Image (cartoon, rainbow, N blue to C red; front, side):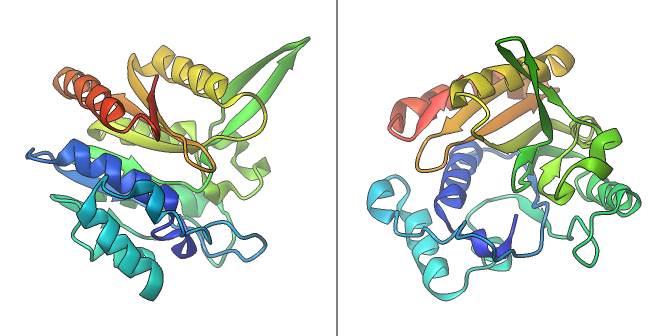
Length: 250
């Protein structure tokens, strides 16, 4: 997550989804931002003229995001918006002095783990999502999830969550919510299906929902708790049914 992304269309989708899930529940959430220093080499996050497309979906969210996008675009403004109930935020940067260092990252993970202990939900928001590697076998494409053993060779490692972190945070909560930005290596739906299969192989109870507008992204719900898993299956179906123009459950 970078400050410059605050209140963009991706953030609107994320907050819309989380607000719908947490509404009228007593569940608590730890949001781990995976904060990364602002970059300036592209225009990512600049598109904020999306409000006509989301009009009426969540009036309070729409009003607050209009305000943030026009006046004060940073993560702290999102935290102070009070848009998510029973939520706390971990906003330490994933790297030090703009450099990715594995020892620093492991210490960062320990702090994130301690911060989010006993949370019903943990949501992570790395810029690019899960660290993956494309595997080509003849004409077939597959995906592997990379661990810390690939950290030093992963370009901009701070923009990804690694397998070691997924396992650590999964063991710290009833449900880990992972943001993943879909890329151009293969059809988006195929990427979602393959990653969901990989996560299911290890964690069994996994759900996924794709946010379709503009640059598609997916949220994986990796559940350790059966009650929350069944709750989410119904909630995500309801959400998709109500907002199918923007959302697709897998």
